[in-house]
Image (cartoon, rainbow, N blue to C red; front, side, top):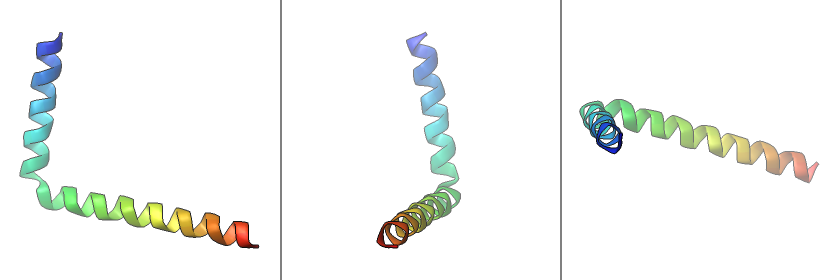
Length: 47
């Protein structure tokens, strides 16, 4: 079971490394979404 989990995580890691540009775009999108959410919360609290 642990070996299967390690194998799956290794495959996912290799897949992410092969799609590093897509991964960077996804990370930037997530960070921008988090920033927008924080800005929305701050503006709501200020009002």
